[in-house]
Image (cartoon, rainbow, N blue to C red):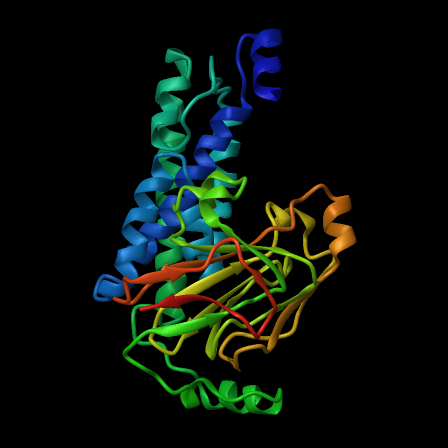
Length: 322
């Protein structure tokens, strides 16, 4: 609406070009991860399609599936986006309309700004890619990552087992309810990213309580410092899942959310992961429906779901992965 008003008042908008550049920048951070993890076929199954969708204007798979998981690519993407956006504004780049973001966004630009905007796009590609590659190599992302002894000791001191003690299986894993409430078909969730399956298939729960629990024995792979609205887990058969509380709750910046776990920690089925303030989420205008998405099935392609079922957290089963 703001872009359309700017176009009506001034004949163009400087805002839309910056939005399209931010898509490109986050995609370029993933491109850096593709380069870093070129020998990791499992990671590339997520990296490559996420990068492509980001360059075409759909950023959620890249942001939630990769960049926030490692955090530093997300920051690198924002840095590149800021520099490219600054160049775009300083050179007066304006779009005559709004449309698809990412690389096709140049088609919305006024022809006289195509040259400058192409340079801005190049900045949005190069800066995040270079920063992600350099920082990733410094962090050893291009090598096999193993939990350090300090991480294992810290996990034990926190009252949980270490990641090294998670018993692995090669077959199906039964998933328990991560909240009390009614299970919902994820394709009925009022959010296109989750409903379309862009992040992966899964199941949702319309909750009646306020404590997110682990659906299975797992290793915590991802937390969301600052927002605490989601958590990533790797279960015993190697599949990775994302648990996401509510819709667009990242905008709350952690207000009303408390995370009780940390990365590398072992959790058992029914262990609490995140507690949240239902009233604050409702007051902020966000739906409470909470999703469990299989972001990487690790070859466990079969997924059985029980939709439309009243469940109790940590007790009833809602899915089988594998």
